Length: 378
Image (cartoon, rainbow, N blue to C red; front, side):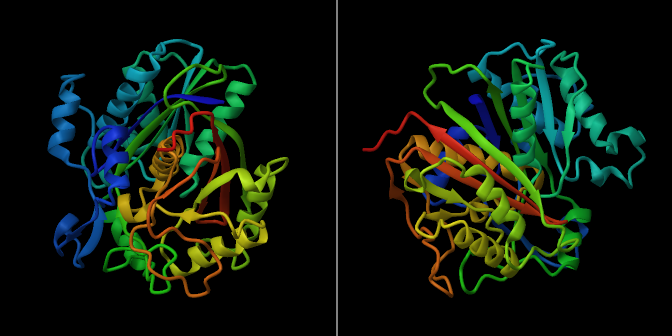
């Protein structure tokens, strides 16, 4: 399954090129927000989308102001991704798949139509904007949603149900979301540090991102294929990961069948910078025999973007692979056990595969394997 169009909207920019350039230069979208933001009593670090720019950019494609910011970002991302793909979004052979964990949950306390808070309603709004006649698919499975949505797209295309699949992941922050993570004591009061020995929690972020897929191999400048994907649930705990990384290990084992590990350029880990998640991923990577493969994480650039994370981080990793680059893990200095090769700075590579890992509440885990034919090493 090949990618033929993509887009990222985040605090770092409204195009994939803007976002990738910032990440390659080591620029983070994270900022410190004082208490009182979102009417919260505690300050926090987060990566928030520029709402004024979102308003202006969306006005360029529609004058309808009845959409929420989350809906505008999703629609704008799909529209922008299709500038490259140029497919018929209104075709019955195109399926739209929405990945989100919270949707418009922040509208719960507002006097608006109750249907606005339902994820199926958000998905239908996006599909109807483009005149798509199919019932859209919603993927809402904790933090793995964006990665699981790509596997769903692959299955729909392989089954012959559709010619094209549009995967769009989106989540915006609110008092409800941030206070929930604060209650878990999972947020870092400082810039997050994935895989570092002094990591103490995650930062949250907002994003909308889209990937458009087809089964036909086309000649495009950023051609990358999703070779394999696997979802495994270890069902260890409602919120804590398996200490042995069992589910993540099984997902990795599944996608690595018949693949020479020597050809893997890097592993883009979930890398939330929480003590338990990063330790679990390290165990899964070691158990899968991948200890010599470079590892990076992107949460210190975008924050944890929830339902958009699997899409955002896959796209950035695709661009890096095509660019012949292994991106640095911003904020990482030293791992306590020195068992993983976590990237402190950008490196060059001429290998053709990368792995994307995701994990989430409820013991859910995903492994994705991507490949490119367009290595460009300077």
